[in-house]
Amino acid sequence: MSIVAPILEPAAYAHGFTRRQGAKAREFWGPGNVGDLLIRRGAEQLYAAYGINLCGKDEKPDVVFYGGGGNMGPLYPGTRPTRLDARAVATALGVPLIMLPQSWTGPEDLEAGQFFARENRSLEYCPHAVLAPDLSLAYAPAIELDQPQHDVGWFMRDDCERHQPAVATNCGDPAALATTAEDYLRIASRYRVIHTDRLHFAIAAMLAGRQAHLYANSTSKTKRFIPLAQWPRLRVGRGVSVRKLTPHAGHGHRQSHPSPRSRRPFGDHSADPAQADGLAVTSTEA
Image 1 (tube, rainbow, N blue to C red):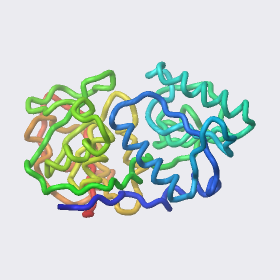
Image 2 (tube, rainbow, N blue to C red; image 1 turned 45 degrees about the horizontal axis):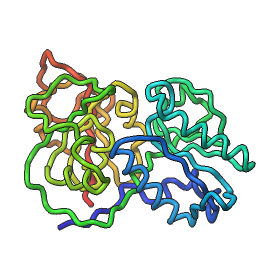
Image 3 (spheres, helix red, strand yellow; image 1 turned 135 degrees about the vertical axis):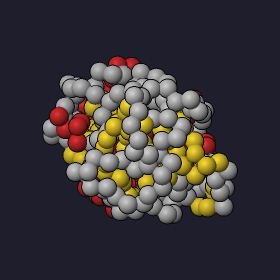
């Protein structure tokens, strides 16, 4: 059995939360999937670490938070009403609206006291945002995980962000296989190596101490995760290259960190007509 530890300690988020230490806060979250629950759990633990207390509707907060995620911009229009609600409440109460680390898929005309972006590409759409890690990296669930039961598992998404060709041994879209953040970790922990194009399933694998290979989706949140992931206790292979996307890809287990100039990914380096950008992300030992 292994006890789960966070990938990043609360200090990695000091530039976003220190100013709000001890504050009373209201929070708003847009609709999402089980991966977004990892973000929410990370936020809860950061609130506790910085002494931030959530208050009800009958109590005036010091700040309004809008939860982190990947839904700023036009790709998910159904999430915008919750942002407008957050903006309206902050304005009515005369307190700042803080957008916790988000990804932008395009411009969005929303005013806030502070924006945080979780990868560099989002700065093109929101240049005044400040970079900060995805909140799920601070998640430390109070569960124990068994040792892996299987060697390699492929879990590729099946939604509007799908960008990769089909994989013969795909176990399914992991977001459809779990209903809680803890379920996500348990599924990932059953495999020694995880291949996925879902960012938070790769993070779940890293939290579980497993090796995770993260592939590009149709947005920038996985491709651009690399530069933002240079934080303590997280090792990232910086190679971004054309890579074979078959059940046999990525079975090499080199632990070296290829130079960005080499443009060589981890794992199998053979060519194949079914090509895709692959980002190899390897967690540290827990």
